[in-house]
Length: 456
Image 1 (tube, rainbow, N blue to C red):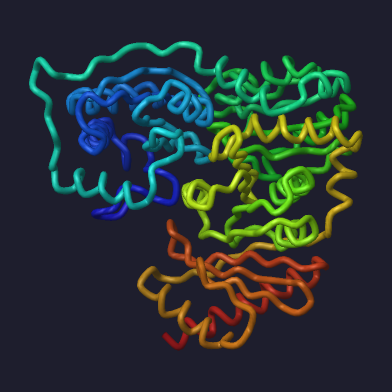
Image 2 (cartoon, one colour):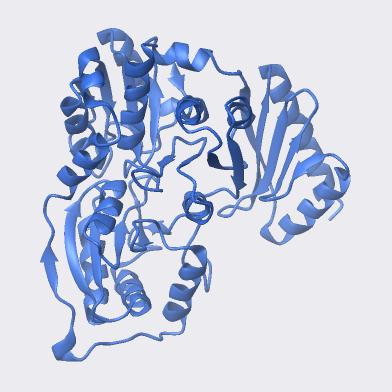
């Protein structure tokens, strides 16, 4: 965290008791409480991290000192807590989570009254209160109250079921392997899928904030056990959640890990078949595959900068009902305009039941792209100049400058080059119709960026 900056791309994050301390969490709670105003009702909950309870209590101290009333929901997936804010007509909420970060991290997210994370502009207001120590301290007899709010996980499961054909899914008797990452996904996803008539095999189901089964980021290298289990037990589907269960990555019945853009494209296609001329919101980091699906099925792509908060806010702005990211985040507006791993799983099962197709077949029907990633070291103070030089070199080409530079080529290949918001690097995402071309793009632009850097 840099001076005068608390919030990153997705909330406040830091290493426990080093970058993020209980003292700081109290002050953040005070800042959020001052931002919302006294006597506002705010929900607080946390994921399975070892420090979750500690930070929740610290934040609650700050909120109640500012005069806010707190309903404490305890341990739950982030989307379950977001749904509870909306469902119980709260004024807002605070979620203690570091999502996919390693176990030594934790974080704090502020939530608006519709369950969506507050906008970056509102985060700036909270930061101003924090750094200027401009807190509202309530009088001793006007301190906020704290009450328990039980049952948020059950309410959330019931809400998801309203958006899919439960009877049709149940009739298929799907076998699903659930990898809950020893975290809060295990509190809801297995229950949901059993209620959808699925047979469940669980991996990493016990709650353990040290994440002994695997790291909470559902990347291919962390999902080998899930892939082999799906094959070994002959399951129809495997699903892996991240640490707060707002993202999900799937394994098809052959044991193949399918990355987020491919499964999002499956959902987008079926959504557009039923809702033609709808808007699909997605960051510029998403595959051209999403653009192809939108064009083929009468949808309209709305590109955004990278970051789930930006996707949610854009969905609200343009009244879109579907959004998605390449990292396994799907935003299903009829339920809530936020990433939601369990809702995504239910949607995929609904599509498999409706079409009678396996996930591997649904993915194989799509245009195929190969994706490669890379990065180049770049000091923060040189990022803007490097981007300007890059854009100058590509003047007149098909370039999107919404977040860095996404360059499309005539052979349907593309590369996104964007300065990292968290590290002194430029990130690269290349995609092409062949792996060889995608690799070549990364190599070519690694050289190009380093050459341009040498001139700055």
